[in-house]
Image (cartoon, rainbow, N blue to C red; front, side, top):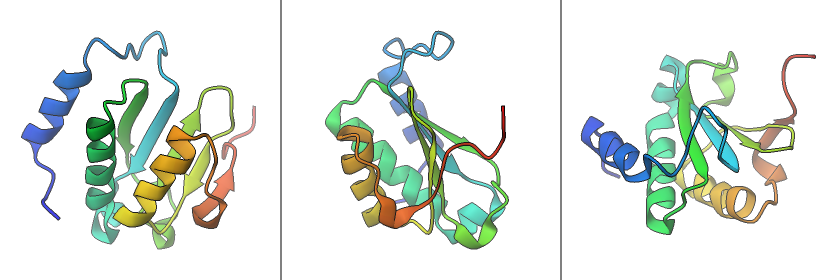
Length: 127
């Protein structure tokens, strides 16, 4: 699989610019790929690349893809968190491109979480 380049990220960012307003929260789903050192070493870049390709090839405009640092669960990397508006976040663990594509199709596109790859449901903090 080809490595993700800065130019790829810039091109995709420009492609969806204007269709998603982060400040107003005009999105249906937010996907966060945990890309701390441990995540990158475990394979977070191919996970991010897979998501970028899924979003681009399907012309999805209501999904935000972002990254974060380490989530503190290094042995479970690579990981991502999916937040669907109005629902508790779900953290997926030990991912690869194939699992990531399945999660994108079933959870992001169809609204059905993929329990077999999920670590947790809900936020780590209390309100």
